[in-house]
Image (cartoon, rainbow, N blue to C red; front, top):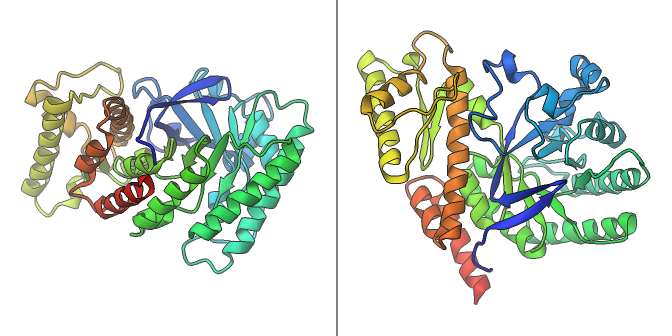
Length: 394
């Protein structure tokens, strides 16, 4: 496998330098989930992922039928938008209760650059994986055909999704997917491809299998834009990028904030809430440790943050400023600082993407990922992926 290089991909009318993070956003999180404003500008977010299934709710169905747009309704401007099908909600069910036509209709109305096909993901222990893969391929053929026959779609493209937990399943899925693309579009080239059903593996202790899946897809599709769904923690995204993913998405920036977690590059999350600690002294110690991580990142890598209500850059050369910042991430009473934690988490993810790009540009990406993952639960998966790369390169 070739050494990692920065890639520029065409994404609708946009050009994306990869690796890139898509910040996942659930309709209504501002303001109902604790956000006090849309965080995109302050956190320098480059791309977002929205979910078509959100628009099945009456409120948002009415809005999208009356001219919803990311620029107007999410204050995101003219930037890259990926719209997922919402299939995640059906990973534990035998049937999908929405139709591919309904999903494509929503995707077309969303003004997104790329829409994900209605796939049928599966948990690791599913017994009907072959049937779900077939469901996904059938929906892909239908949506590609419908899109080809629709005059209103403009430049929106569809992103097929690959599923499989063995090399044989993956190669078989891609072979069938190429056949579908050739039949419906006249070309078996797949500009954008998602990898589904891997996040539960990585998050459930089988990150090595997730790594193998990504590497196998990349070898089969060397020229495609490869996206990994829900592989977007500050640590896990690096494993995905190392294995060949161009982009990932993450909703954990806000979900973890709601559970009082704050994240930093190269470190596991820290719960910053008084009720999580037996004594005030233990809580103070946790905050000090988090502040020390920030200080070290600032001194070694130039990490900084902002006032998440004004966007003002904070002077992290002052430890007092860092301590005040950590206090503004921490909950003493309830969930009073969820907005600050959510913005902080998203900012940390975007910082890590920039650091990854810098390491790739300087031809030290493998060393960078190793340094980030060496004391984490993902190191064995990284080491496994590294050994597979070396074998392939011989």
